[in-house]
Amino acid sequence: MSSVALSVLDLVALRPGEGVGSAIARSVETARHVERLGYKRFWLAEHHSISGLACSATAVLIAHVANATRSIRVGSGGVMLPNHAPLVVAEQFGTLESLFPGRIDLGLGRAPGSDMATMRALRRDLGTSGDEFPELLQELRSYLGPKVPGQRVFAFPGQNTNVPITLLGSSDFSAQLAGLMGLPFAFASHFAPQYLLQALDLYRETFTPSAVLREPYAMAGVPVIVADTDAEAQRLLTTPQQRFLALIRNQPVELKPQVDSMEELWNSEEKQAVEARLARAIVGSPETVAGKLEKFVRITGVQEIFAVTDTYEPADRLRSYELLAEVADNIRLSPAVDMTAMS
Image 1 (cartoon, rainbow, N blue to C red):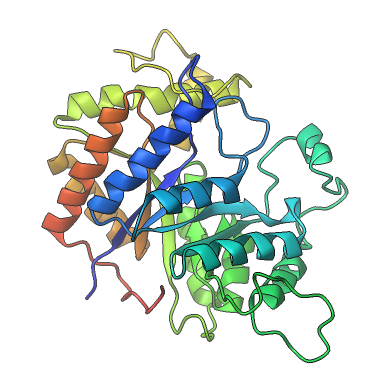
Image 2 (cartoon, one colour):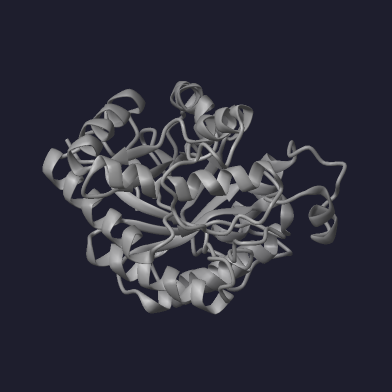
């Protein structure tokens, strides 16, 4: 039985007062680091008009990271398809696949990744609910697949590049759609953990074999921090806790230095809300994380984990990915369902 793959989801987070170029350079170094450690993918998210995150030009960042690495797959986690014309997405990712053959992934979501004002600035129809996502997806797939007789509009580059598509979600909509279309599915339990098991069950129940997959292929984004001791890891956790607290308060979500205690920073309602967002977090020493990781894989049956590791000091993040790789190697994580032959 194959072991669970490890990957990374990156948001290109800034520290207070830091320039965007510095944050991007740090993401590139992180990608190189996890590539050396044997991680499978390095994905970048799409967010707009959020102070503290420099990942809005997702396709540009993918090109930059892919050019700086050699073997790790690089992709979107994800592109919010309703924000874009499918033809443009196909052209962008067709170009990326042409530049970096066999290394590009296209993860797709249907949420705006922004607020109403930003949606308007993106020229997104504010009257839409996301229900048009299946049609947009089908159009996009037609631009990435073989050109058919009578097709008047085509993507070049893009046509017949067959860039692998994964559907992303934080509820049951994309889970069911991915199942019905026989596509891989990635659940965002790094910020919506309460729906994880429900969505994965629905994905597997509705899965229909396709030319892409014979069996379901499930992934999950998970907050992960591994340090030499439990106490150190818990202290590092205060950085993502402060980020979610800032998000709740509609403040910039920059990476803030870890603190000894959060008790003076939040009230009881805020504490509850932040802890709910981090309910699936895997945090601790290698020994502690080994147990938590085994339990997570056993319960969810996922074939791939996207570690989301937000620490203030870059060295702590690199160290966490290093320790996580060692933990996974030592315990030989195995999902409940064998991995399929996904790229």
